[in-house]
Picture 1 (cartoon, rainbow, N blue to C red):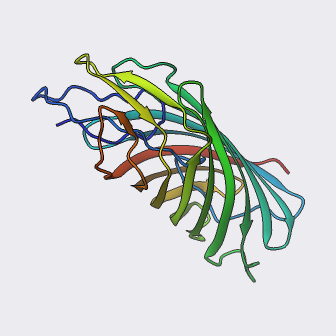
Picture 2 (cartoon, rainbow, N blue to C red):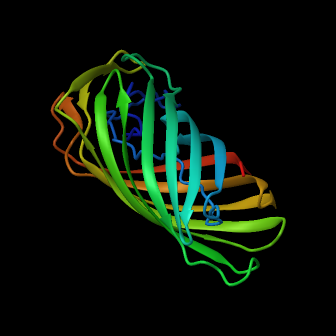
Length: 251
């Protein structure tokens, strides 16, 4: 069977499975940070760091997306840093339905206890708000809350993160998509909440490191995203992502 959920509110299509049987495609409104790999080692006051990342996102059998993200963090005072993200999501499945790329943005704050020593395990709380835009499906807003734990080794630091958020579209815009089999569906962005867990590792010196990891995100849709043909069933969606980022300090 083809998967029923989609991460991007873009071209809601699915790849043809061996059985050639298709389930109804659906749209899911994504968070403003689709791949939540991050480090709790925040910059000191007056310092900044940058992370540039790529990711691959999808379900077990269907919708696949390529993602990119640029993140800047700036330390404003002991225990507090600001974050700014800009991202891109692109659907790579077959099918038709308009533009396949969405842009996302996020502003947030990172709160963390100031460690007494550099070799202590680091933990941080993340709060943010943002949104995204697709020329096919419209715009949406997001809020999120999470926590991340980082190891303290000089060269190898494990990363673990958890979090969740809410995404809500602006307006009631609809869009039509066509599967590779020629079936047409009218969709809309739904209100949904999500929760994620992330695990990875940071390799290299804290000043210049590579992050590699995976994220599992579960979406709970508050309404059906299928307008036509009628579909009253509201299901959940589970997505997986793998990705990597390069983080470096500017000061």
